[in-house]
Image (cartoon, rainbow, N blue to C red; front, side, top):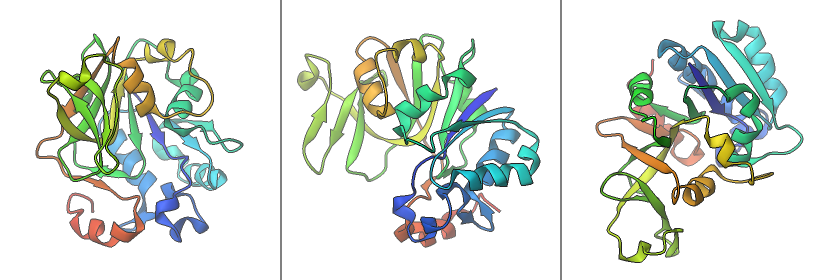
Length: 244
């Protein structure tokens, strides 16, 4: 099975830790975030991994080499010259991810006890992407209908709403926070042909969901933490009882 790890971000929210290293190599209970995630993916049956790099990207390459790629088949999607955001980064890695089977996409700074293999099995053949979501406090939410199909996005702090459905305002919806983990059908790259350069995968999903099914996978009973915020890192470390 294939997976892509988003590890290219500059780690602004983790400063000053990221002044001298990439976010992916910030230690969590004695091991870099990237190592925790690679071992979790390997245990779940993923054997071919794509990692995008930008900020201190050479450190990630050296780390992987020093650990013999953890026994995995790892490809580097190089964004060191120009950071492409999540959508552009995913499209840039298409060479490694195209095929007949869906693949997993995982933010390097998301730590969880979710069963990744079961999550992938939940992805339906008629669905372009399945997004792991949860009901947690945040200002930004993805909006889904009663069948867990994506309709749009909202920012409760600013009142901004994005949706391309003409009758969106009259539709009831469920608001979920995106968990930074998704399963994607490779047909997504065909839908991305007109999208170029730097763009957000969420912006792409909001535009694509009018024609294609983008589904929610509510993470009920799952421990899910964003380890990418310096101000909450200490609290997060205390709560990570599922990581040794």
